[in-house]
Length: 184
Image (cartoon, rainbow, N blue to C red; front, side, top):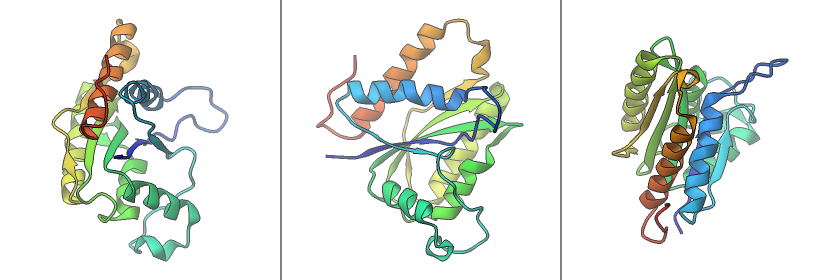
């Protein structure tokens, strides 16, 4: 069976803060759609792992068990959803750091679907373009459909957004192959 991995690129909340991460909450809705499609996805949450900052070494040069685990999870996946925050018209640093750290090998020939959550529309669309370029540079295939959400706090139809995120999860399940059932 094809493995799906969901990557949350948000480091929120900051220590001592109770503010939730929109990128993480939305990825949880995508997960519901993936599960409805008959899949049990793996998770990588950049808030929960302590990854070093990339300084030019290859992944094995860091002697980091968490980096090794993240790399192994990506390497065993065929479809990867990256939930990427975008601020100030750019992709968040932790997401780019992940790509820099693990290098191209675990991404090569994988399908990557983007869930880009921006502080505003401009940041979200700029973040999508940057993520698409990075995904292409590491040899992965950018899925034909991604979700781009500018400032989710201004959404008035929250139930509609949740429905769309679950549908996106169903789409991701379909990307994983014919052994997944379509999500309703």
